[in-house]
Length: 301
Image (tube, rainbow, N blue to C red; front, side):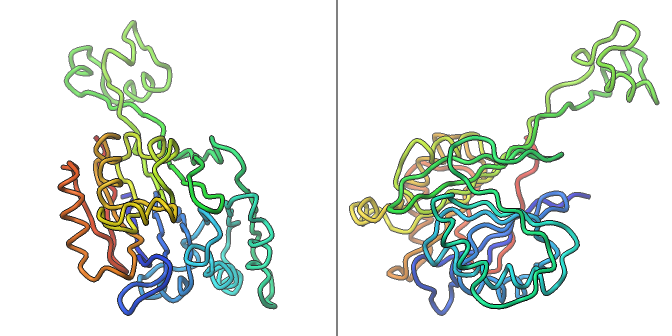
């Protein structure tokens, strides 16, 4: 059975706290692992969370502030130390190539794994695999920042009662699915569209078009909520979101499961973020992220 879940490695914003590590998130998706924004301490958090270097196939960095990228050096070296048996692809803002180079070669080590660099410079599709399309949209932050969106292509769900009504059974079901028509019966007559799942990852940003584009119809939206609503001016000045802003985006976009994270150290009561998100009108499933928690992606619609 395929596993699709989010592993939260860290949830702090600019500085780690006693209870919150710097950022780090791993999306496990049908045997592939996508690591998002590895902040300082990510390698150790992976160990504590039960995520191995072998689980990683892709690294996605939104921007080059330290709390989102200082862990790159350790993660890349661990991938090579453990001799991960497959190439690992790295996405990051092209304007930060010099930062990526410094982190990749921060110290001496032996390169044993092919690290494929795929820097991001424009909105749109980044990569296409058998089970998803990876997209990106630019965000609004003091340094260039991009969010990421994983989209599973729509499929078809066969309807047993309609198949039976047309006398289609056994190997003929597979033939009909492959050919689109069999003995005058079309695929549309005996099946329905099965919407693909959508996962969105939005970090440091003000409200902007990219936030809404990434969040639209997401089954799971992982989004920063650095500040509470009473500090909205501070959030805007520093290129961040409040809990209420993030929740209103999720509500208007039809998000099914909202995961709030990237909390400022000035707040010591996580329940405040939940209260403000609910007050903003979000009624779907809501998670206030904690370090080392695992959050399943919702089942298909």
